[in-house]
Length: 369
Image (tube, rainbow, N blue to C red; front, side):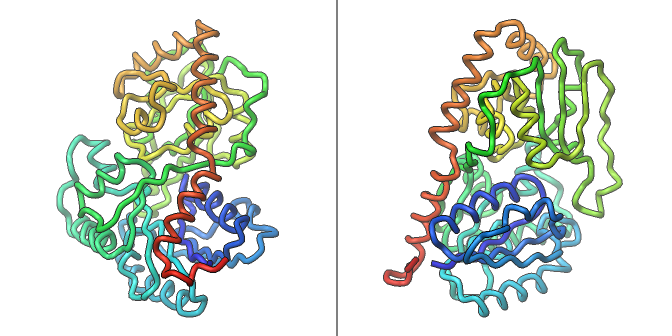
């Protein structure tokens, strides 16, 4: 079987893509990967070395959620259609909604990683006002969802969100994201340290919640402060200085794995998180998860995370201090999250789920590995 995958190079979608592509190639599938957004840095593509049956094509087409994306959509769609005609894949696996109605006959699977309207509603408490660009965006997303053969979301909450804000897919499925446990170290000696990973410019991640209070335990925050949309790049987050708080900036995967291995706790501060790869990576590193009280964290982590009141910085600080002061409780939560991650959210399980979906989309007799 040959699968064409699209991805963007911003944030967790690239980590998701790495797990997906390497897993498919290990299973003997051919993969053509097309990236959009910024051209990936060499450090982002090192994992591709040595992959057999793999074809990578990097582009700089704007992503559909960017303010000037409309200018690129026709060109990017034509480029993708030309790649489909050239490579003749059996299945198209898109990480963008807009290509759900690509003018080709190949079965199209669209993954709902996140979207502008549900992001805005979570951050601002209401839907965004209907500007010309937003009308174009909503129409584009709804059309892609309606014409895709299958829409996949990384949580039930996210599948319900796109159904509510755009249109209900003809066929929908939930495939929880997964990571390779071998990339993380759950056995290192832990420091008294809280880690938070998130884009500093993204109010949905609200990593600044940690800066509202003084903490008795050191806090490390890792994440990019550079907005990927050039229209919004001048925006700078307000980050009050606090004693014991350290900002690391954007980190490589190796650097992040080291931070996870050192941290005894992970602060999942997001107010909007369709899944959350960073908390998963922390759990696979045996960190206790301190999570914001939002539906997706409950769906993903159940009783294995320690929750703080929704968006409440004081209660976040109180919860961190509670775990910091009670080593046994902290270790209990760390082990609960670790075992849940190993049981439910591995890359192997994710690949199994996608392979089953691919086979359901490909006509009988065509799915030959």
